[in-house]
Amino acid sequence: MSLVTAYFNCGCPASAARAFDEVPARTVVTWTAAVSGLALNARYEEALALFSEMCACASVSANSSTYSSAILACSGARALRDGRRIHELVLKSGHGGDLRVASALTDVYSKCGETDDAIGVFESSEELDEVALTVVLACLAQNGSEGSAFELGAGFYVDPNMVSAVLGEFGVGSSYAFAKQTHALVVKKGLDSNVFVCNGLVNAYSKCGDIADSVNVFIRTARKNSVSYNSMIAALARHGRGHDALRMYVDMRAHGVAPTDVTFLSLLHACSHIGCAETGFEYLRTMSEVYGMTPRAEHYACVVDMLGRAGRLREVKRFVEGLAMTENSVEVWQALLGVCRIHGDAEMGRRAAEKVGGGGPGVRGGVCCDGEFMLCREGLEGEGEGDEADEGERGTEGDWDELGRGREGDTSIPSGG
Image 1 (cartoon, one colour):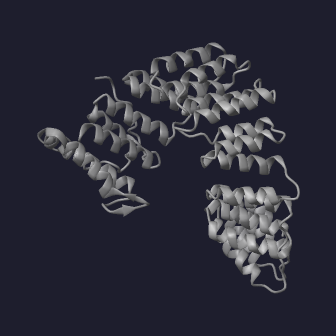
Image 2 (cartoon, one colour):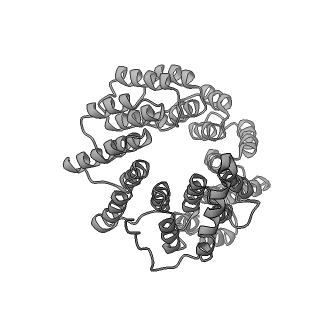
Image 3 (cartoon, helix red, strand yellow):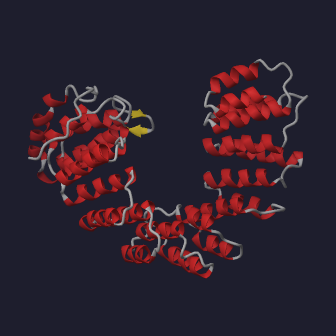
């Protein structure tokens, strides 16, 4: 069993599987180690298949660790049906009161959007811990039950990790009233000096549409870290205050706070929306040459968007062509598709849509390429733009024959123009 666990801990699931197969008499500990290892290595379907195989063995009975590991796999795979099936087994075997199992069940129901079931497991647990409470609060916030989350949180001891987890579930358009309620709870519980909580509030207010409250929380944060500045820069960029976002970066450096790759992602986003392409390229150079960070696909996608918004389509083409295959990912093609919609370039849009969908029109990888292409076509044919659209097709058709082959060694940054 120790060898199986060791292989999984080293990220070698294939070797772990071979070691497991060589075990002659498997105990529940051996089975659990394998199920847990597969789940922790994101091999969720294999973990559930192995759990089912174990359940078919009359000589072995699952314990609480086995169940919690199998439920972890359900959470990762968003496998609600399997989660319910395992929940039934848990109740029949008498493990429903185990804290780890209850927390795992709460998590799987939360991740699958089954709020009532998550609360039901939570309330029926014999003992509660902060992990289970955090999961339920985040579930309620994520699924639009902000009032219930606030009422539940107010009745328990709430620590910074819980509040941060709940605030992290805020998405664009989330309830402003719930953000204010959570902020009030933070003050009541004396957590308003915690930098992680403050960072979460900055982000939450921004996503609720209130940049003023984001700024106020940021100003009052005593010990700002890189996440504090990243949250504020992203918030300003999100609200169209790109120049303020760039000034915030200057303030960040003046206070000796080192930027991260997330900082530069937000800066590129800001540059894209205020038309400062050359400034954006300078940030990309700084990221690589000064801080030694390797740009990710998300950074390159921002560059594509930045050039596209500036109308520099030829440079977009050259930039994407110069990316290596590992960098030329779906994020880049999605950004390119957005550029095509802005400028009504059907030929470029078709190629981008095919790449987003995995090649060829139709449904690929869960994306309908024909639908994406039709969005581009609507931009071409809408309101008298047909002639201009045809010109756009003629202007790029020949240039895009080599696009997407990922020519190594030509990742030069386009010059101004």
